[in-house]
Length: 128
Image 1 (cartoon, helix red, strand yellow):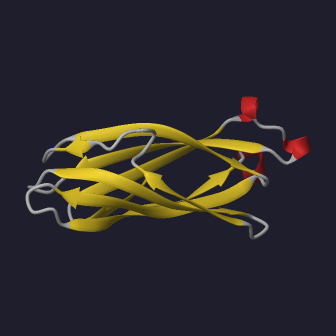
Image 2 (cartoon, one colour; image 1 turned 90 degrees about the horizontal axis):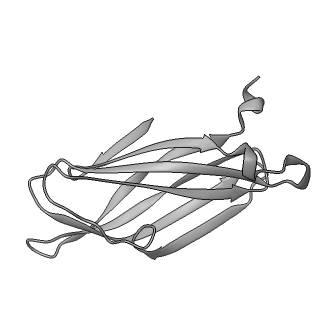
């Protein structure tokens, strides 16, 4: 698991290759990632938006931006945790993702970007 902390908000990522949904012969590789967001600050925060960069091993870059995560804009009180699972399709067996969440501190309305740590997605057979 890889993690980073921005202004007391910790983001951790765990990835998994999904062979049952992948078809290497057709250059289709599916990965899931579990994101855990922990509020270690002393302020209530709300996740408003996400902004991702998705890279494959041949240099293709996709950018994904939008409201919330998996249809939610979670509010996290101090000490609370939000977890979700999402997925990514690649045309290669190796790739990576990184990005930011736009978060609002509820008390004063301050917006700030929380770093999502860069993580790799590798089909297990590539590790041999």
